[in-house]
Length: 299
View 1 (cartoon, rainbow, N blue to C red):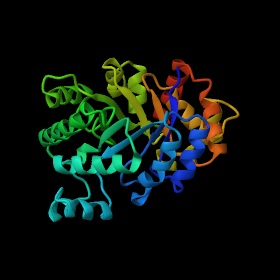
View 2: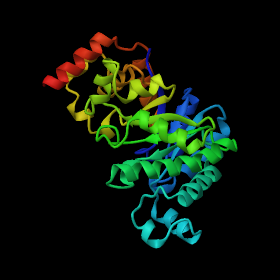
View 3: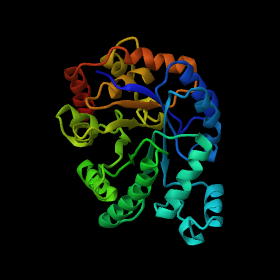
View 4: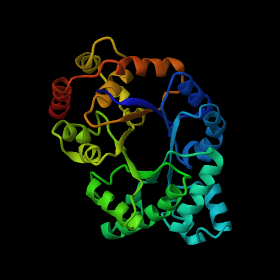
């Protein structure tokens, strides 16, 4: 089984055009955040989502642009000092930002707590911040305003700031005895950041743990922000699968990862999207995937 393809909008310049192209091609997920596209991604996505009501939208809470932080301060959701950090999981801000996001997008299937490892240097305090954010998002979920929530992290799992089991426990605490609405985790998986992939091949790590708990798993940055492409030599591409483009080969390896549900790619044109979809039609078997990982680890 291969992961489905989703549109990631982090480094997409023309977000509305990319989203319409992806949705027209049958995209199931669009992933965004309030700070993407210099703060305009949400506004550009709203009309697209209205035209494609079946497409699932995931957004985030935590990071904010200059304009958003000024608005949050004016609304009393943050103080000037709190806003200066550029990232906040303060409950009043999570509530304000999520309301703001819903007003622009129209809906949200998942709201990820965005890189909560940025909240504090102390692991215990990060857990406190996550639990408080979860409590706010539980309010939205119980009211039917969002489908659920999750955690989108860059280094939280690899640095040992939290585990999937700990996130589930924090969600249970936030739910206060009611069924919790923790539904997803998002983390980077690529041929550069191999650990989640190799762990999943062994049935361990955050992807396997999340799948075992019924959470939907998202891979961010499968091309490592584009930095991976110069490293995709013809020999490596052929080793993955002859005839593919470097981008398609790198994406195929990630999408073939066990326990991965959605691979997010910043495909801005129909040619790029169709190239990715074509590559994912025939996933790599686990033995081949392991041989690729072993080759990269040894090389």
